[in-house]
Length: 350
Length: 262
Image 1 (cartoon, rainbow over the protein chains, first blue to last red):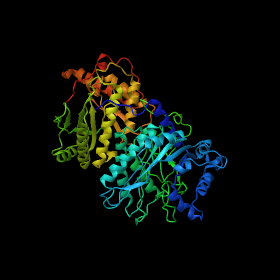
Image 2 (image 1 turned 135 degrees about the vertical axis):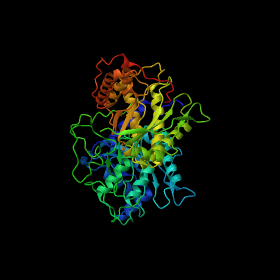
Image 3 (image 1 turned 45 degrees about the vertical axis):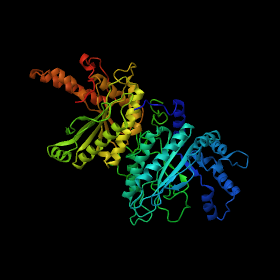
Image 4 (image 1 turned 60 degrees about the vertical axis):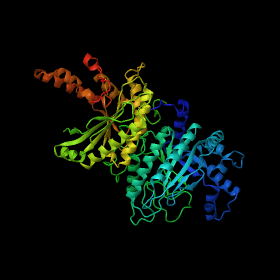
């Protein structure tokens, strides 16, 4: 095996790990405001607004300038390219507005899905060309993290091995390039909820896909402490006859993550609402998987579950109704007095 | 009540076209062997694969082939109600530094867990027996137990999913005392880890073997050595071991066997 050639310096690793930790700090989530010009059209028209640049600017400004009650809730805001370079009424660029509220700026960098020839409607995601230069520019302009979405779907014959392998690989290339530019990549291998498959099937497919993703990240020398994962929750297909409880969905989701996500990953940020973010919310939105979390499709709430485990002896058990014996190490929450909370070292070597 | 285990592999065989690399045989009839062992009282099994670090090894073939055979073995064991201990040992032979061992171990374990996923192995029902991350025996630089612990736990955090209940380190030629100290330091490492970190290896027996020396009269003394080391390692896997300094010269003797092949 060739001797290790470090992909990142210790300083680069420190910066990436710190950014990732800030995004998923306790109580914080990500506002995904990165709808492309095409997809925001549906949202605006659903409320009778025209899809003009000014309306797009105004709507985002509305969200970004909300009062300081949101500050402890939002760790990061993901933007589309156009929004990065728009300004608020007071002349501040939006990245500045967001940072002034204590959140980090993210940028969607993929260029949409393209078909994989020889498959039944499967896709990969493009956007790698010139990504190095684009990331360098986005970093200069205030972005600290990025997002790239890959899409897979469940049918009798999909996802195929090719689709899994190709999407895992492109996610790893994207992640590697981001990190070279001090940008934390959010890795999003979304398995669509379309179909009538049951919960078990979704869990099985999610496990296979995530195993392939993390093998690809390893092969591409991606620094896991400086990444975040944005997976689908494990749910049955929308057309599935069986209805599952939030506890069943949560158990299936956390089990799949425990089997695939290495502890070095600082956080997992779920898309809530169970549908593709490119579609407007519908009245038949399935219930959220995590109890007590509001069903707001645009908001990604970070669930710092799998990787953050506390050894504090005062760990607080969660409320009854959960199967403690199945996931004993996971369901305990870290108590706020735990001395380890603020001093989570990242690893050796840095 | 302790569980009994069986070592079910049939030793290493060479991989043609490589520079002394090997894979491990023993899959033939393994299904029937496991069924029998289970009837006869075995609750878990062990299978050892061996990789080594040089300028050009381990090769992609060696990593892939050993990961695959470990996954086949694990799958067959589970079909028979036997928990497989998966052991991809990277030998400590050589003069490579700590970073190199960490890098190689990471690549190997990533391949192992991908293979286990591909072969549908139930992670909650297996255990991992890896080497600790240490420099090669001939490496000029000496590393502290804290550096070894950090490098080891960092690497495991990169590769071992939380569903795996426990990691039982092999001692790989470390002296008995070294192994206990390293295990203790690993368990005191401030990095969060979801799996148990414990030990399994020659280090438990070495002093007992020496004390026995083949003579029946030494039985009590030998048992005493075994019990002492078991107690020490029990404390070490809770991060509570304090080396007393009275372990004696024998405990510090290296157990390193060059190119260890069983």
